[in-house]
Amino acid sequence: MTVPGTRSRWLRGTRSPGARTLLVCFPHAGGAAGFFHDWAALTPPWLDVLAVQYPGRQDRLNDPCPATIEELADTVAEALVREAADGPPLALFGHSMGSAVAYEVAGRLADAGRAPARLVVSGRGRPRGPHELAPRAAPDDDEILRHVRTLDPAGAALYDHPDLRPVIMPALRADFRMLAAHRPAPRRLGVPVTACGGDRDPVCPVAELSSWSDVTAREPEVRVFEGGHFYLTPRKTDVLALLAARLV
Image (spheres, rainbow, N blue to C red):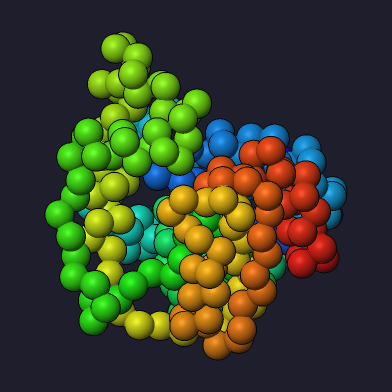
């Protein structure tokens, strides 16, 4: 069955009556739910996959982007509490910026009595609090695009298109603004955490994946795959096999 009603503003995918776990996926900065469009077809039938659709992109192009990651997490958590009511356990997967959003959502779900069965973070170390790093100025467009070209040269080509750039740049700019300001208060999650990354990621070295131990009550599992920041695209089969093994 398709996710119904107003929930479809935030969640994309389908639900099956026999699913035992609901995996919710959070995209990277500038990304959209479509990044995970084929995951459901590559996972076991007992695992439902939904992807979060952030405002300001694709079919939500005219929806205003949130000002902070906390504001985004508040709204997504509310949508998931409704979606998960009387349903199977939730698991969260976030890539890059999506890791920070998923971390915030996991805490809110725990507060609401719906703690996820597992949090899987990818391509990003744990958030730093205000006592560690001061919020920084949001980067300008040139800085943002240099960063994106370093991480995803093929995907960054979209931002060079004269007709597409004015349409898709506002969401990317808003995402980087949120990341620049994100300094959450210290919090330890009581859920199992798996931290994944590429062995050649220029912005999230392998050693940084272990930093999630500072915000979790249990020692996180660290899994490293061959590749760069977007290792999970060529290694998709391996990543999904890991998820299925941890969520069974």
